[in-house]
Length: 554
Picture 1 (cartoon, rainbow, N blue to C red):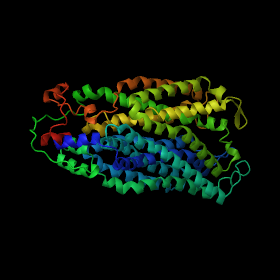
Picture 2 (cartoon, rainbow, N blue to C red):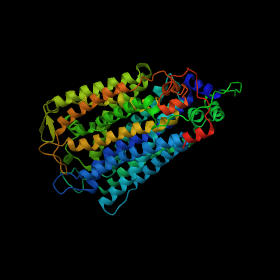
Picture 3 (cartoon, rainbow, N blue to C red):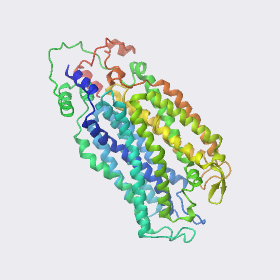
Picture 4 (cartoon, rainbow, N blue to C red):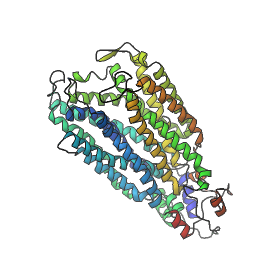
């Protein structure tokens, strides 16, 4: 059958220009994701100085609740977007909703930079509103980009292609750092200001209000440049052939992509009509894929709890190694410049290399091995940091830390980032796009990634409060369990992620249809009873009756 031939050709296709084009087009959402998350973390200190000037002899900072809202509201929007667009991608097709996510990100990025208000609360409220919708668009890109790239790829290099889409986050981090550094340096040169200790008022020039707005809005530029290309991408052949049951359209679309002619064959006898395929909440799905969904959701959840909490001790790291002087010794723009530079250095030596190690090795070592390895080393390094944290950091002496082993401190910190990206941060994105049936693939990826974002919310907010000192917490925060104990809990979290990794299958080098069971015929009585047969090894799915197809798409 044509559909089978098209899918088989996709699996066996040599690496072509359309693969790289798809990586770039699909990766722009993750570029914007990383750009937004990185850039807002460099701007929160500037926002604090601009809108909440201190009256206690220290530079202004965002109140605890405002800081949590500004940083975290995008995570909440992302979670909602992952669930909604994951469902929509299976219901209406990947292509029909793909451009919508990018347009939401473009509009919300621009609107974030235009946030207005007559009071600081008004500005922050407006900013949070638009950042929620920015997160909503970003969330949609998780299931759609992963599913589209997975369904376009050949089985030999599928892991590398999907990992390359996710690795665009690294490019977003570097561009965000470059833009933040360039804009803050340009304004600092044009509007020089004394440090806070010299003049608390003049240390924050009013022109600095343009800096955070320019930086946030610039994230829309690459997305705009790829919007047309995204709108012209054909629907994936797997969705068209397996879900819509339109093999003729799948043939035409893939002829354009593969530059290969597929002749329609009508000499193949049609198999017996099949009952409707099992749904997400059926016993058949639970029997065949329940363990996979549990493995994907739990590992992504525990990974993101640890991953999004790693910045909790960033302040101690930067201060200990001398990258970030005391806030009072800098102007607002100088502080923004130094924070951006420090975070860029960490990204260059650990975060970005981790992404591309995954791209290079994932189809050689396998997803499961890399995920187990990543969780193992994240657990190890966090245990070491937890057990020897204060000896590594040193003791406070003025505005910095004296003594300690600062080189080991930053190396251990960098390796936790490296093995998160050359590990579960990449693999948890890839596996859900491979193991589920085409008609449920986007939905299940959305559920898995939403579980991850729930973990991110726990990591970013729960541990923000939990990591506070047991005796002298930061202003506006209650007492916590301290950073050392928080790191110990995070190490245990990584260990749990390691254990749950054994629930996911190894997907390296296998076709999506073999992994999802779509090459195995599903009998009507097996659907109702939850028994899914092993099948006869035949390729492809027979066309469904119109009523069954309509039901599956409802």
